Image 1: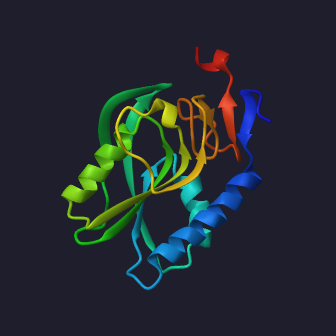
Image 2: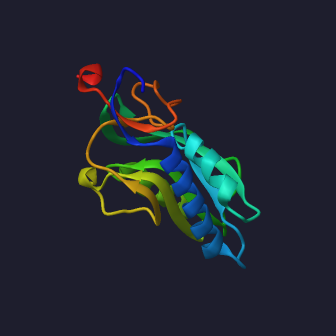
Length: 178
């Protein structure tokens, strides 16, 4: 365990097992239909996307958006688009891939943007859900794990761009960010 981690919340093995289950659920939902375009939000969702797509048994394509709403441990409440999609989503079904649904502000805004671009349906798969922090009424359609209100890092999640490469979800020690 990394010295900055207070405790491991979700192991790598648990993440892989849940990604398999989610991949199966997603495959079943879209079986016989046009597959969705997976839109992953950079940078945090990349490890989850990489694990998840191994278990989606559909001919999928994916693209990336880079949006930001955090600085350190605080959500700024203001969504900035740093990189937009390269593909058109007009009349497409979208599966938005997120690392964590926290306040819900980013998810709500990105969903709105995709609908404004003409997406006919937007569903969300998120590795983590932190409902205790929610300030807008939105939830993911597929959730890997529901977690308590603790500051988590690893498997794509960061603190000031560090710790994304940890193979598990851990709770960051308070003295690191206070």
